[in-house]
Length: 581
Image (cartoon, rainbow, N blue to C red; front, side, top):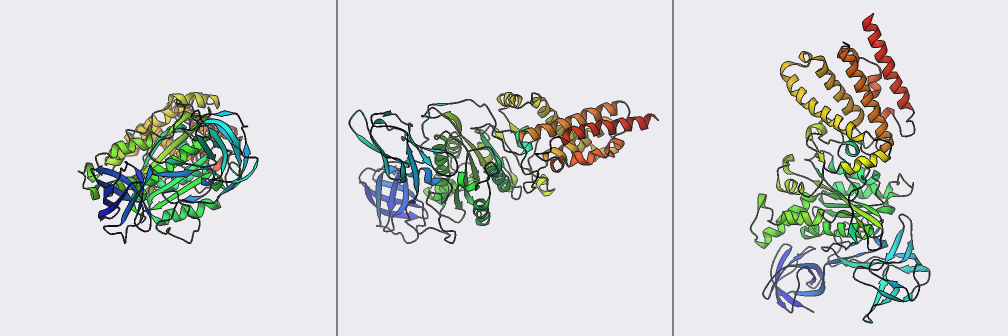
């Protein structure tokens, strides 16, 4: 066992004289209270470590004891449906705001175990030993990566503790491995997979502007930057409630306490729209507020992605919501400053870019060691100061994500939500998703998407021109472009997270709405070409329903599309007949 004594301490960082061999990222026990720490630098016989708890009361001479293993968390079925701090320690009592220093990451959980192997079977890494009976997604007991052998003993069907041995494997060297429902895994090491798979289908969010214009693939990476008050947290909460992932991992990394309190209060009371059961049965919340120890904030991101990878290895599709990576980067900056490292852009450490890459690259759609398909989709919120997207965290993140959802403060101020700026946002993985939409009966999705994006771009250009010459001075086709853009914005892109009708929109409903609006635009363009005035089109009665299409067209009332389509034709026909008479 490696030992040492504190020589110097400053905030979450300490230096200790070492006796024995420490390792980088080795977990430490610091002081008489056994605070959790981690080695971050080695220099001869000096160890530099960061402490994940409040260091008040520590002093030179206090002991530092190495564990001999890297910083790890215990992953297992007992993680699902619970609330933890940034080091995966249970926050069981809502009345307790902070854990007592030195609290270990222990939890009590018992589950019904159903064996799936027999004595003499050979099990490799990731093999399924049995299944766990519990509410929510179906979970399995897996052989941990790097372990395997012949089954010597397996527990009978019945209730077992999460840490209780349910199977013993004997490898080729005769070593015995005790397998439990849970196991420890280092947070900074990605869990191995059989192979990575190419993008094939989107993660359906239920938000029209995202699914149709800027989709994120299952196993992909998306960034959600936006200034204060642009709706990052509300949008992420909506995605957590409505996206088609099997498991949700929500990490509040350095966020304001009142926002996390709202999440912690609301999520346990929500019903899962897919099953009608509590949403928490398939959710893990990691709460790390801005006034918690700064080093724990840095670790919370790795804790969350490790938990997500564990459920991915179960053959599940996981969505990880990180709110926000800017606060995580600020924790890196503070610790780096304590270490006296040479600062980079805006004071962030020079390795900010590589740390962001390490995090986002752990998102993937994979074939697991057990041969099943699983995925981790990462959506990282960013809080750029003053909404400046050129700042380091945003600019570096753009290099590692394929989907960029830029939130616009002017749209948020106009109460237009989701406040996604369609001109600053982008999605790069469109081609594989076109085939998915085709299987959903929407072969013309790429053309519709391009038509809407082109329309919104032309709207921006014409609005700048109209501010100079006036809207009435524009030619009729250009005035129609502005009118159609307003209809698309109001009727399709606007979507309230608090509307009981429109808070979620299925792909079938999205396709029906977009086709109807495309039909209106085609008929309107033909009418203007025949001499109909845009002001007359703006006065049509059907236009009010089209502008409120999200509220008018419910999920169980898609037959209304046909009647609205007929009404569009009838009103345009009447308008042209009146003009000719």
